[in-house]
Image (cartoon, rainbow over all chains, first blue to last red; front, side, top):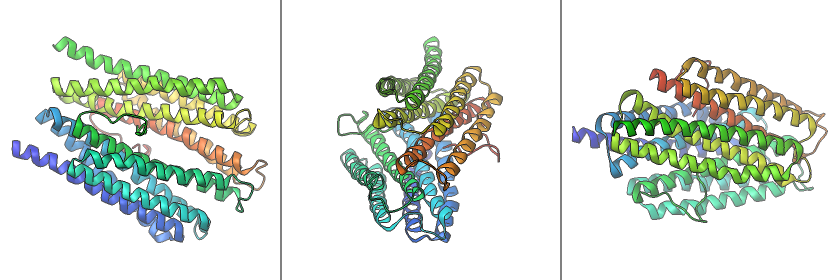
Length: 222
Length: 222
């Protein structure tokens, strides 16, 4: 029974890592589909989201069974509760990647965003990718210090988004309302993907230390 | 011990209802601050969000203690796990109301949205208010059937948002890029508030029936 119990706890961690890998792939491919107006790739991202959702459901069911049958306490209970939240965060990140891909599909064969904006989204996607990787690695390594880096990277994405707003609301914005609206909403999706990665970092710090991170530097991460 | 246990379970439900009341007030006042360009009201909504976050933290801590000390099973375990998710959904709804209020504050003394758009947000806010009330009441009454109504109301909000997009992307949109961007983002906030209410409904159905709702009519509600 105890062996199976630890197998189940490890399966939860493995599945969170698998979800993180799938989300990284989804964000990267959704961004490529957006930049290149690649309809086929956008549709792949959209259909691949079901696998992320299935992992969410499996983790939730396994966590429920662990709580019901094993009544974990202390650090193991913290891990099960944190994993329940993390699998939700990752499923939301997958949904947000789908929204990016849907925008690419909706505007196809046009490009949804003009070139200068595309360059910003490429940078945001790259930072987000690093954040998801950091979150996943720090869970495996139980590394609260590295998890704290996520808040800094989140600031970098917020800064790009602030630049983007200045650009699209300036008098010299050379594109139309549609491009501005798509850019604003896409920026929101990337911002939320990063927020969820920070929230995962917060949960890892909670698993390791038993305390939620606090302070000015740490954003509110619901 | 058992009496205290049920007191704690009841306190969780009471606190979810309190959060729902605070979120209804936040959405209603944020919407009024938006429509009337009322800076003082916007700032009230922003500062009042701390109370919602405190309730979130208290519910989470109490749920953790319940799991650690009481090891609930079956329906009570489902309730504790569902409450953990619901308190998160409600804290996110509070954050989204804050985003609405921040938009009103950012554009003050101007009105952030033009009159025809304001009327749409008034309608969306009213539907969202009914949805949050329904979610709260169905939790207290353990009423899976009424929880199912939430999906229909969510569709009504999505329809208003689709109208709004057609309006702001038409050649006859008489306002500027800034108004279009604000409208698109605000629409996203209201859409997400409604999505969270649907997700709460889904959790209530799970508490009552032991199964997540499924089928074409039920939106994916992560």
